[in-house]
Image (cartoon, rainbow, N blue to C red; front, side, top):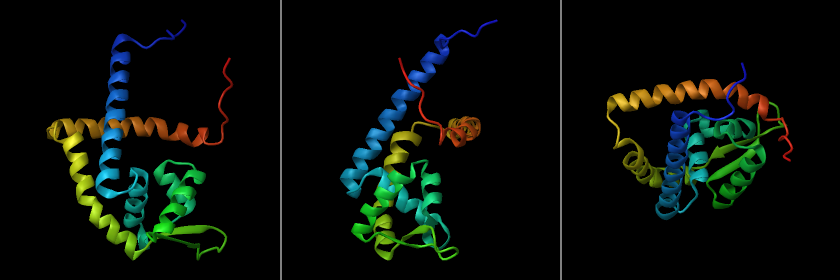
Length: 165
């Protein structure tokens, strides 16, 4: 039996809710980060990921992977953050071929300055509307979706887009 090519009414409803929430959440967090932190959300995320890494440093390809971004986009953002003095790029000590991005003291100071406002923004927009059960359910659902999507993401990295008619 052939699979119906359309989403069911319930699937369409949930999909559209997801799209609306995703856009609203990203737009509001981005707007607040620009206003309160003076940087795009993507730059904040790079600083945050480096702050959590051992020695506040990650290889560039690891940073791109954790951000789920292309190496080109990550490199461009790191270059901009370097110009602010918040990140230092250096040869990877283990092999000398690759490069690592390292959070500087100035970057750590900047992150600590903007993190409380960012946390409050995310909390007020996303989590204040949820009780503990909702939060646990959402975490379980997101975990399930990520586990389902991650293997596909790896295979899709080098797959060119399909041509359209």
